[in-house]
Amino acid sequence: GETRYTYCSDCGFSARCEICARPLTTAGDAKTLQCENCGSRSDMLLQCPSCASTAIKSRGVGSGALVRQLSREFQGRTVVEYSSLSPLSRQALERADIVVATNKIFSEGIAHFDLAAFVQIDADLTIPNYHAAESLRHYILKLSSQVPELYIQTFAPEHRLLTTLHDVTRFYEDEMAERRLTHYPPFATIMKIAVRDAERGRYDEKLHSLTALLKDAHFFGPFEKRSKRSYEAHVILRMTAQEFRKILDRQPTDSYNWFHVEINPFSSL
Image 1 (cartoon, rainbow, N blue to C red):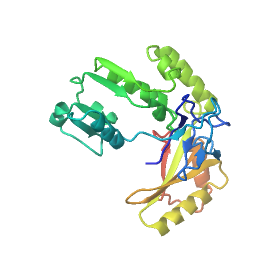
Image 2: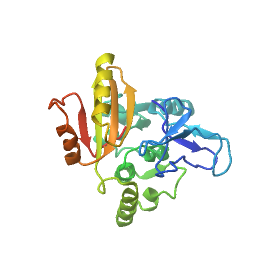
Image 3: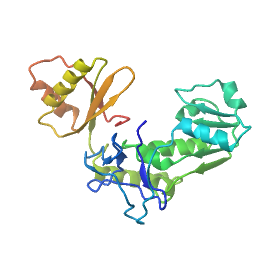
Image 4: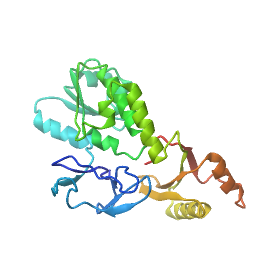
């Protein structure tokens, strides 16, 4: 997929929004940094603001690329990928020497592994989901309880997630302070409204209708993407379901089966 994490490979600096301090992701043109929280955009970094290095990288490690790299480094070992797109039998997992996995691995027993490692967790922390740190903390603690040794690769060991791994009260306080500052749940309500269609003409009509419906509301987007089967787009709003109902009530039709609404969505992508 598109790269999502922009950082300095010399000092570990990660690009953040100057307006709301949220992590910036790389836009599809690879020349622009964008904030999916407030919608601001800026030019791609040419030099690190922290150490003046020009070693700026924009990447997210894909599991397939990691499998190929490990296969080259550990020739003679069985390296496999385990994800929703690459399912394996329990027997195949147990026979493998090295498994590159997504969180789907937690649906299987993993007690037979000698060690585990989270690779480049900084990328996971820059995902534009308000609960990214909370979710990652859950998986780190779950994995650490099931393997003898656990390693975490990061440029930011001082991140609140890592400094409070064994102090849930402090993590909660820090997480709530961050969400209060950035107006995320439970201090605000987020709505993700999406349209989708396999036919381009109908998709364009739906997207036009959506932006017209929300013409008086402040929203971020639309964020568009193309899958194998359909055209898709979504916008992000900060408003309650009751406020959105008032927008619908002002419209001349009661037929709204052409869009989908999520309240406080699991993913903002």
